[in-house]
Amino acid sequence: MNAAVMSLGSKSSLMILEEMKKYFDAVDNIDLRDVEVNLGGAGKLNVLYQGNQLPQYGCIYARGSFRYATLLRSVTLALHRSSYMPIKAETFTLGHDKLLTHLALQHFSIPMPATYLASSTRAAKKILNEVTYPIVLKFPHGTGGKGVMFAESYAAASSMLDALFALNQPFLIQEYIETGGVDVRAVVVGDKVVASMKRKAVRGEMRANIHAGGTGQSVVLDEKTKRIAIDTAISIGADICAVDMLESPKGPVVIEANLSPGLQGITKATSINVADKIAKYLSEKSEIFSARDRDEATQKIFEDLGLSGEIATQIITNLDFRANRILLPKIATDISQFSGKDEVIVKVEKGKLVVEKA
Image (cartoon, rainbow, N blue to C red; front, side):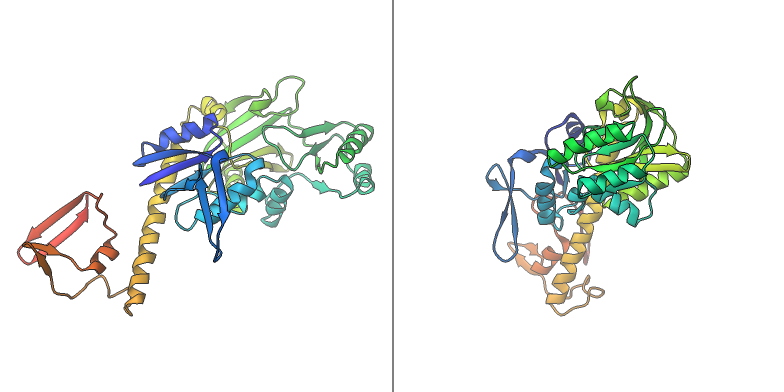
């Protein structure tokens, strides 16, 4: 089975690509910047890479920043029926917008800090009059701790607010939870947390992100925290993501979900090959997806012939011989899904012939 990593070529994406080579026949590196989606007739979306039709893959792992959220959503919408893709189409716009992410978390009753969105300066300043300081101001988009600001007082928050509204920049107001500059990152793959670490901010910095200079240390999460991380991934529609949490007096709260997490920091901190965990999962899920796809194709053949799927695995027919060689009926080829590239095992005895993939 062939696969592809569609990304901006980050180190983490290349780490995953290299590990995938252990589990797939071939893995292509698709530069997201060279991908386009054409809206054709009859509701069909065509995905092109460097001007040519994108090849068929059994698995496509699409990753990228919030700037490419719409493209990633379009690509996934076009290809998710023919290739296993671990992130749902709508998740790219939801997961790259902190407000939409928090709305999804709230819908699934996942604990998070109190969060506010204001549509006007007057409404925002009313919120500022009611909250407890310090507070956090966040842009809806941004990763690696970028676009996150802290205000110690109403005066500081009000000044930031005036500047943001002057720039016509939307933002969130969020409860600040004191943790001593420490947060927790959990990488979720399927229904498991495969790696987790505590991140500690550098002195004078309140953001614990590795990209902001924070340091990571391996940590073993309790079952409650693991469950919150896994439920967060489910709530946003991602089979693979990182979930960032804070330990509040009331327990863990989710502050962010990252669809394209960096792997260098957590790999170093935990000594776990996270890229391999992801690659192996992609392989396993792709096999399940492919088998389901074959089953659906077989069922369609049966329906076209007016047969039920339960009885059609046995076919009564006459054999066709060409130059003393047996030719099987076309329906056998259609149902078995064999191709000329497959290696097969042929078991022969008198009155019986069995052909299986090697």
